[in-house]
Image (cartoon, rainbow, N blue to C red; front, side, top):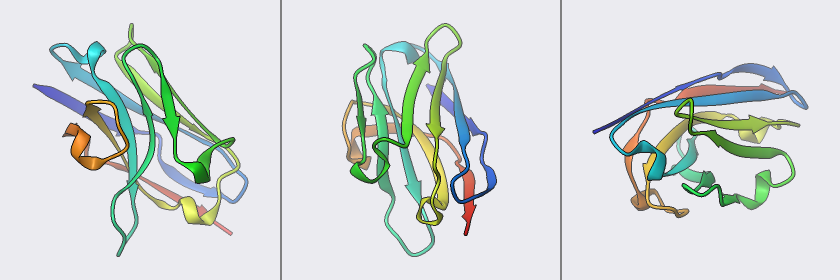
Amino acid sequence: QVQLVESGGGLVQAGGSLRLSCAASGRGISIYAMGWFRQSPGKEREFVATIGWRGTTSLRDSVKGRFTVSRDNAKNTVYLQMNNLKPEDTAVYHCAAGSWGTAVSSYDYWGQGTQVTVSS
């Protein structure tokens, strides 16, 4: 029903910036909450940010003040602006669609992910 495709990942030095995009398609996509999660080798997938259909946002404590999540419903696209990146931000970043929340179980649809690597 919903397809999500992430882009914008890459290799950056610590302190640099990246903007991730998630192009969404499918019926009723504008009323889903959209989440960003990340996963690095050997670790559980963890919540990064979410934005509800009315624009309410929530961010993981460790990225507050550095990351911003937004959505452009006209373009069916969700963004994650990442500034002042740190090596510990290195992970595969996935976008997801579902109910608003911080748990993986709150989301029903997932993208394939995009790699973000931050060097020291």
